[in-house]
Structure formats: C-alpha cells, structure tokens
Length: 99
Image (cartoon, rainbow, N blue to C red):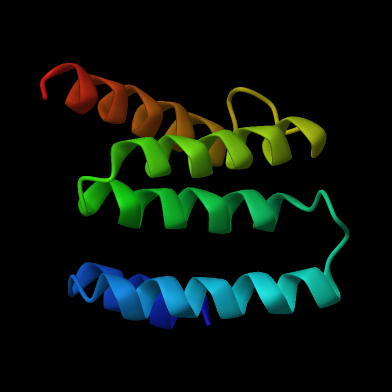
C-alpha cells in the first residue's frame, strides 16, 4: 500500500495518495502496536503531501504526529526517519516564513 501512495504522490495525484495513506493507517491500526514507528513514517509521508500542496500548517501537524510516534518508539536522533523528519520540518518552517 505504501508503494502505491508514494508513486501517486510522486505523480502529484495528491488526493489519491492521501486515500492510500488513509487506507494504510487503517491497516496499521489493526495490525501494529499503537506506537509502532511505521505510524510515524505514514504521518511523515502524509505531511509531505500537504507540504507539496502548500498546506504548510497541515504538514506541520502531521510532522508533529510523526515526531511523537518516533519519540514513543524510542528512535534515536541519528535514525534516518528522525533525520528526514527534522529536515522536512525545517524546510516547511522556511517556506512558511517566506509566504
């Protein structure tokens, strides 16, 4: 499911990508523990879609959810997902400040 969402987001079919991520979250809720880091990855990806659509506040909201999950999952600051998240937060804040 993640692959479909990623491909559609790369093709800028954002609404379809969001629907795939929503389905992915639904599956994750049924199959993974509540604080599994994959939830964070999904929230990060959803944030990226909102950032691409210039919906920066929504993007930051999903990045915040991802950050909470990563912290609860005890991911180290050097983990690639945490580093990626911090980069996305930084670039989104920069975009907001240039509006």
